[in-house]
Image (cartoon, rainbow, N blue to C red; front, side):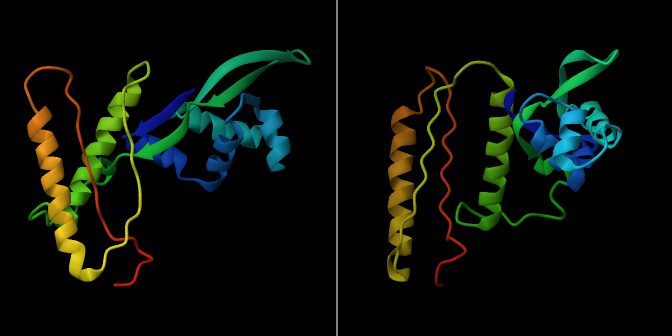
Length: 185
């Protein structure tokens, strides 16, 4: 099972966007038959198979084995990934996005989409990758916000200048700083 499956085709998204299919997919975190999932969801195996078949056709579920039960071959299915991400390109940007400068929300949205595409491409590869994720929360009085952003930009620019040579493996550094929705404005 992959960690991440990046959905970039409409038929994948359409297959996923049914509440019953999401429930079936959740039950398939571990290999199970349609009969076993049906018992858990109080549905017939045929009804579960209908949803599994759609998920299978969209590449969201894999048939991992089969077993013989009362003279019938019963499929065992498992979700293809632990997480499913929808590509922002499924809909795309409607109209022009305002991305005037690095302090605009449009710029941040573009950056998040780029990172999402990059991470999905990395997940498609194999092996462990040298990555780093840092997250934290800071509290800034309104009068110190600009000073903090300036210092953060300068610090990161110094790092990029120091390590931005032409030799070695290329890494992308993306830093996002935005107000939390639950803070006072």
